[in-house]
Length: 81
Image (cartoon, rainbow, N blue to C red; front, top):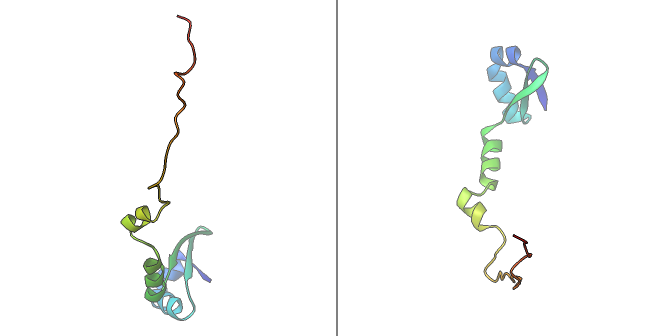
């Protein structure tokens, strides 16, 4: 992954976009720290397609249809008033 400083990415945005398409994700840094990544639209769509929507995520969890809870019949601890 190629790394660009913000100023270079601003002045050469077309090149950053083309390299994202041909070479893969391009990292953008500010003050030496990674701040953003430029992806091709194809890479972005493949990432989004693999992620389930919120409803599917919730429904995909463990099934608890046969979940039974056994309760302790005792009334708890004794307290002196």
